Length: 518
Image 1 (cartoon, rainbow, N blue to C red):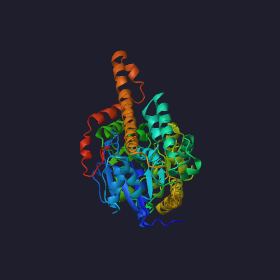
Image 2 (cartoon, helix red, strand yellow; image 1 turned 180 degrees about the horizontal axis):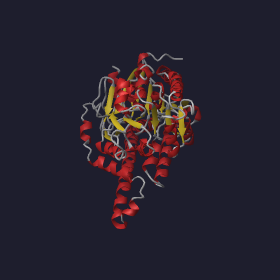
Image 3 (cartoon, rainbow, N blue to C red; image 1 turned 90 degrees about the horizontal axis):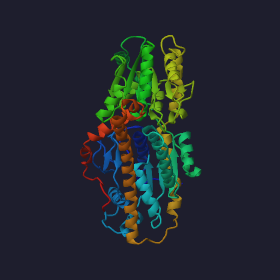
Image 4 (spheres, helix red, strand yellow; image 1 turned 135 degrees about the vertical axis):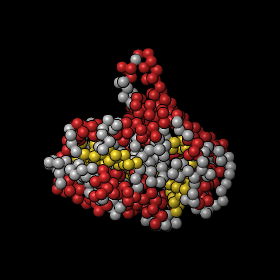
């Protein structure tokens, strides 16, 4: 097997920094690869936290998502521009500028990385995959590894009603299958059995698929981080069960379900305090989520915003039970962090957590729509419950032992092994077609970029239509019909956020790629 020391890796990710579980996972993999001598250059859209490029990052321009403005949809770009910028950071060849197809061929052949890694490919990763697929007809193929970390199809199901949701899922599955099935893509990492089934239905070759779960920092997330005074400040009085939820404040995270759980517990006069940790740069989205809990007494729910590092670890270890309400997670890193902190976990049985939690041993998995069953599981941990005290502690110890087996070194090693395995085919020579005419290359890039533009604006148009049409109908048919519209509240929140967005503040980076010009 080839050594990775000195190899060049061009890593594209939809988000980078301590933003979410996907970006934290990507960061840990990068740390491992760099510690083994891999020269990694990161390409990611701008964000409020990282608006400009650095010595090891290329920040590309994008439009912030209305409900999650810390994430951006990348604008169309050219791969040869990215490779040229990366080569400067690798201190390789001088950057070039040209508008013809020879420029692209020169970039791929002379300045190319040894590998390309796509973390949770979406608006940025799809562009790169499409250009690589088309350019493979006349340029040497760089081995590509992709990590499927974001379930876009589930987001589409949650956002739209039928038949648009089914159409959206079909389009996404078709596009992903088309891009991932190309020979340039050597491996597609998946985090759970459900994602594997999805990729197989998308016609991705099964021999390309490899399970890659997540690691957890078991030194940071540890039961010893518990702070009795901090817990008392939340619980207020002895006997109150502190329930914890950690995730980004966003509609697709299941906060409507979590709010229903909290209201049911309050009606049952159950002594609890719900601690919600997470943030969102859109005030409209934060307000809409807080409104779901507004009818509860102020001493029952606490929103702490975004916590990181030891403050986050203290919040985990100082709780009694972890509640996971999202059904859109491909893995659910927060579940693993809770288990490492010694908490029993109650989660809806859909998505990544289904493969993490040992039902009845480290926590409970509840059918996704079974609200009463979820509430009943919470009550079991309360005063006089079957799992109060010793039962909860035993579950916490089991979860801790399971988390201790999920180290970041193990995850990084698996990625490194797959990178090394992809090298022989690339280094021993691959079949390369004759060079395309220069105008053909330019046409390829232009058409692929325009395709991405069309998809982005098509999606935006759908959101607008499904937000505005119900309002128009309301004026004609009255409020009775509109009340039945299942996603009206979420889409109104999206619209308000979109109208109030000042996205120009995010596009102030000095080294951002904002168009398809060379």
